[in-house]
Image (cartoon, rainbow, N blue to C red; front, top):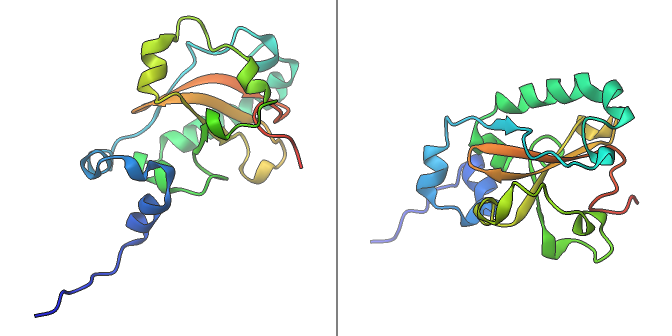
Amino acid sequence: MGKIKLKSTKVQKGIQSSEFSKLKLNDILDSKEKRIAFNFSFLSDNDKYNLNNKKFGIQSQYLFRRIHEMSELSMVELIVGNKRQTLEVLKKIDLPSNAKLLQLVDHKEFGIKRANQSRSKYYIFRLCKNNNPYETRIIGRFIDPVFYIMYLDFEHKLYAPRR
């Protein structure tokens, strides 16, 4: 008797092709209804990348709207979503050697334990979908289900040179 091959669902295909495919299936299923929370307590002390930047005043309403949008999504939706609209994974090894993010030091109280829990990866989301009207990136570390916002990259220059 031959095997029956079932078609994969859109979510399953997204998980298989995503950076998160290494997560255990049970973790994904447990996260089905889980929502993301945001934490600002480890935001950079560098005024270029925190709320003291002059550009923040103009963009603050976008930031809070965007956080609200993302907090309405389930963990699965964030994991398998399009990087222009949800989370994008940024591994340090994938950064160009001259990336400014490599020269910055995370908030001293974030610590090694949390860095290890976040698998030493940064996660990024765009302030505005499709960069319109701002190309600002929010960079942080993710420890399920909390997104620790660490840098507000108003000029989109911390991790990738503009094309």
